[in-house]
Length: 244
Image (tube, rainbow, N blue to C red; front, side, top):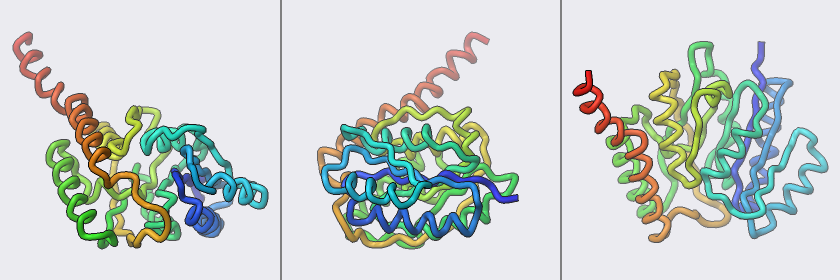
């Protein structure tokens, strides 16, 4: 029996790529199940993303558009997508077309009864050298600091059972939501499967992450998240042991 799927894309100034992402997702979903929906979270885009989505929605009733009048950040867009998904499985990837939505079919096949989340990892990263370098530093920093067991926490290509979010509550509004999500799902004991995916050069727009001010902001957010999910527990354990 096929499982129902919600597919959503967070989009910020992705007018040049979001149409292909939506159409590719619909074509792929038609091959997998009769019960699906596609959601785009337009996170305060300032280009023509809104106009393109309005046109698409007139022709594809399976498409729903969630519009944030003001940009809420990557985490805010993901939280909106998860909150509005209604199907048994929830898949998301970015609206910038650096991943191929057709590879969702590989993840769907991997979602067996004993798996709760199918996590992607990039076969190779198709970014400028400095982005690849910063990405590797980020990956190993969060992997070690948070004790993450996945191969690529920075791969935003995931298929998750919606019931996972009955237990896992996400709070971040920035890009550190991916670390928060993986850490909380892992600590809750849910079962991961991992699948390699292709990663492509950005064809339209520019990354919102790679500037010094934003990197500094991410560093602050990561430190706060580490204290919330790791550091405070380390401090709490000796205190609890002393009381015992």
